[in-house]
Length: 172
Image (cartoon, rainbow, N blue to C red; front, side, top):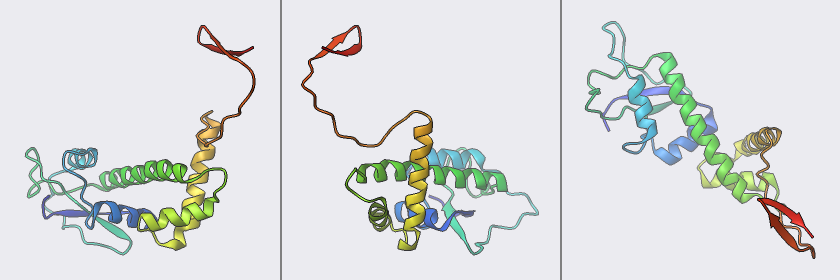
């Protein structure tokens, strides 16, 4: 990694999650999609542009070293480039949230208890547990409207004999 950073605005719980997973400043693993996205939106710093300064509520992200774009010269991101990277970090969080939270939830556990556990596992302040639970619930409902039911359910045992004909399941 280089010594150059830029700053993105993230929601506080997403920033806490990202810092817990990738460190501060956020450094994506070498050869990762995150680094490729950063390199794709890098620009040469304009002559009249001052270096980024951290404002309250912003999270630092390290600019990866690249042979194609040396960080000494290529260390500027436009506001839309910063938003692009922030959206990528939020998508990583959303994927992680749904995957891990869905594994933690079953018919017997409460979503709020699972939200507390998720926050503790990922370095997120407990005050955001309700937000985490609600985001998971909304994503699950969005998938249900698309016809994807990802909830865990137990199998219904029957005494019927299962017959499979030409890819269709029939009961006798």
